[in-house]
Image 1: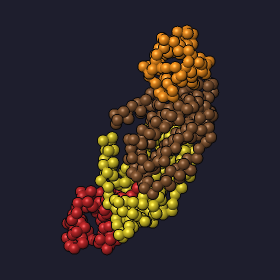
Image 2: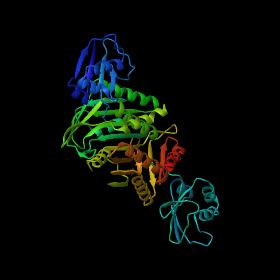
Image 3: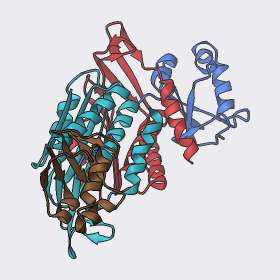
Image 4: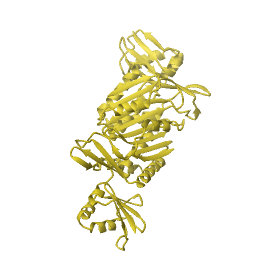
Amino acid sequence: MIEILYFARLREQLETESEELELTSEVSDIASLANLLRSRGGVWEEAFGGPTMMSAVNQEVANPTTAIKDGDEVAFFPPVTGG
Amino acid sequence: MIEILYFARLREQLETESEELELTSEVSDIASLANLLRSRGGVWEEAFGGPTMMSAVNQEVANPTTAIKDGDEVAFFPPVTGG
Amino acid sequence: MNCISVQTEPFDITAVQDELRAESPAIGALVSFVGLMRDINEGDAVSTMTLEHYPGMTEKALETIVAEANERWDLIGIRVIHRVGELKPQDPIVLVAVTSAHRGEAFQACEFIIDYLKSRAPFWKKENTPEGERWVDARHTDKEAEDRWSSHA
Amino acid sequence: MNCISVQTEPFDITAVQDELRAESPAIGALVSFVGLMRDINEGDAVSTMTLEHYPGMTEKALETIVAEANERWDLIGIRVIHRVGELKPQDPIVLVAVTSAHRGEAFQACEFIIDYLKSRAPFWKKENTPEGERWVDARHTDKEAEDRWSSHA
């Protein structure tokens, strides 16, 4: 099981703040998880089809090849705009 | 007639804060004025013999070729150390 | 000393700077950056703004940025304070203040921290304009500002 | 708005920054530098310091520096305050504060102004140490800091 968090514009677009997901063998890193989410179609396909998504694993900035394992906290969000 | 001002370490070394000087034909710029002052000997020769003197004419930073004319306010001082 | 804070309450720019410069008589320079909410963005009037963040990760990201600044430069103290929640025009959004013995290091570290914060720390701005709410898009120049520092590594 | 002041009285960093950032809702960035008196210089303890200046020329020099910063960058406000007379360790000596719409310009202008001030404005520091009074020598690094800006011209 992993926890997935969505923030800002993405949270509104997906109408989802967070979810729990059972890890399957097809999901090993950020790229494969994003593929799985995109395959849900609709707003998910739209949201995960673009090139400018940022991600984090256990609260540290991740990239497509960052590994995901059971118990991880994964987050997806748009480019940051603080400061 | 010009007014000459001396500041900081230089003022203490020369034991002079300011003086008035009648311009002669040999003084046309900062370099020739410094030569005249150096020719006084003693502490004047010491002070104006070094390479690191700064100068100003009418309160603007000058260099050896800056012209001096009657009525000018000329200043000599060590490199600045404010801020 | 280094302090990081993410808070909904306004912060006192003065108190922070006074505290920071009193920390050591070896401090010769204090450089501070205050980011303020503007009333115009991309040509439109903005009446209020809401700042969302990722609690937990935000603090971690700021700690990483501060630790990296301390590795790169010889600093005495650092403060990073970032507001979240509702803001009005002219409200301070972020304060980055750095002290060091000499000014060059304080200037570089302060700019480094705000550049990295802008492209790495998980904060998002949503503006209220006469046309309704809108999420602020990341500025291309912020990424460029961050990239500058890579060549120093 | 630009203000320059050379004064024997201590200055209020807060009041200056508050005034500066209240000037316009278009301000997105406030960068400030405070130069503080250190208790150690060149390895020796310093108990007090006296700052001498060239009245008249000092103000002219600061005005020239501020005018040049305004020509180079798109700024909203500038404050330059420099103390003269007797100072104690941890006293602020100089404040340079700059506001602009975006941070890059404010950072560059603030550093430019203090770099130029350090090598162009007629101030001289005399320190009191256990061995007696001594004039502070100009730091070579200040001249280098100023020279950096020539390549931008």
